[in-house]
Length: 88
Image (tube, rainbow, N blue to C red; front, side, top):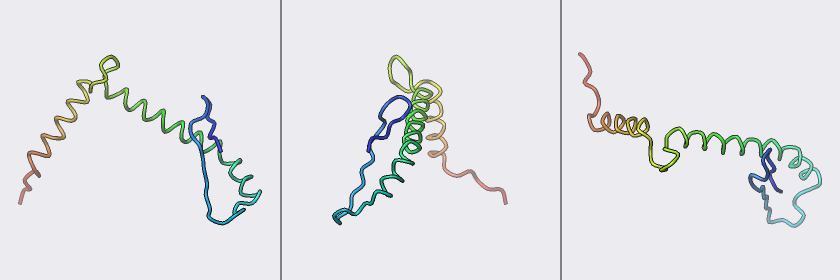
C-alpha cells in the first residue's frame, strides 16, 4: 500500500503473513484509515532530518559548518578530559 504524503509517495507499507488469506477486509479498511497518518509521520520525520542536516552542514560544500565543527570539538575535548573532579 503506498504511503502518500502531501508531496507525493513517501514510502510503501507491506504486510506479510504465512497463512493464505490471513488478512480480512476489515484489516484493509483499518490500514486505509491509518495510512495517511503514517505517511504524514514519515514525511514529518524526513523534513526534520533535512532541517537538522541543513543546520549542521554548509549548503555549497556539504561539509560540516563552523558551528557544528565547534560542537564536535567541545564534545571530544570533554570526553578526552575525563570526568570532572568532585569536591569532598
